[in-house]
Length: 205
View (spheres, helix red, strand yellow):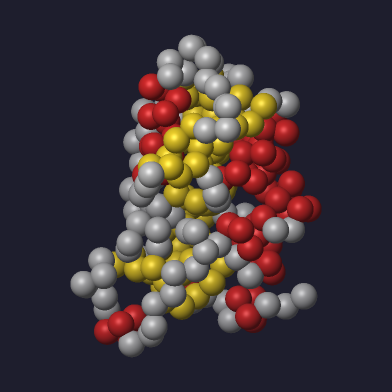
């Protein structure tokens, strides 16, 4: 199955990707790696976009990719996995299944992430935070703050794609499968070529 993303490769000058070729091929095959004018959750604009949900809709791909992430997280002691809704839920579930741990998630309530649905965090309980994509790391940091506020411990953070300009400092180990060093722009500082293209804010990321 050839997709538009697969048939129109992203120019190397526009994106610097540190990843195995099979993962890059998988992202393109599923249409998860796109080229255009996008508004990221952070509010920044970019020529490239990774939509985790497009990849994770394919259960075999989700299992394979999250198994790889779980293998990188296996070195960190944890009792459970926690993830921010909505994008991190599938990642957290699959990573937890691979690690043989329980999985819980936080979700929006009154504009902020909150622990709901009867989920509990015990004092000194150790967590790995799992997410699909990190740009500035705001949702991950909110999740970490929730765990720590309840006396829990965050052993590590793991994401499929790290597209941050500078690796976030979460106060714990941070691992990713992919580092995408993409150009991002403030809304009022768009280059001329990008300003000519209508901006799209796809999905939740």
